[in-house]
Length: 289
View (cartoon, one colour):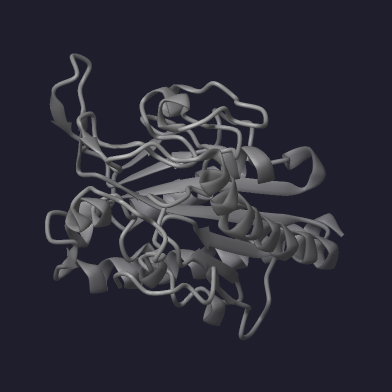
């Protein structure tokens, strides 16, 4: 959806039945582009940065008893999976008034407000005033985090524990060791910050269920997790957060950003996966009482 005012920041679906201590979120599938974006890159290139239609892959989660949150705004406008201090100095038209946290992602032009699409294509033909970047953080980034935190807190208060599945998609082609394009062979990559963001039993359950369905699964490589699992993964407090990356070749034509015939099968498999996770989390919460 292109160039319209954004009335809502997200879509939030509460469990419709059998509420379980599980919350899913999709921070990068937003496709409503705010009117004040002011980008110069081709719109089609911006669309290819989306985790396109991941929200639709998990649209049955609420029926299974899980909470679900999906951003409506695009990650290329402001990225909820970056810390708000991951500011790219090369994008600034004036001095930044607050803290800047250096990061490898920001240095590559992929900070909380991104400068680049890939290594050579710029999002803008201008520098951005600090006030414009701060406005995006205040109006979109922080409210998304506050909504997700509220959903996780409410679930934790009810059950004493909460499990969080942070849902993404990944390009079918990545970069090899020499920087040349190379296919990502795995169907799924699960990231738990190398064992820090959730009980290994949660990660292993998801991996085993996916493998039983015939998918290949990698753990923490090439993606180990980013801001959202870092913020919400506190297993010692009964807060378990796992990042899932889905290979887009399973369901999407990446160049045209359109669904292909694999979408229905993948959606059905993920619906079965969510049902299994719901059973697992409910059993774990009950055992801990």
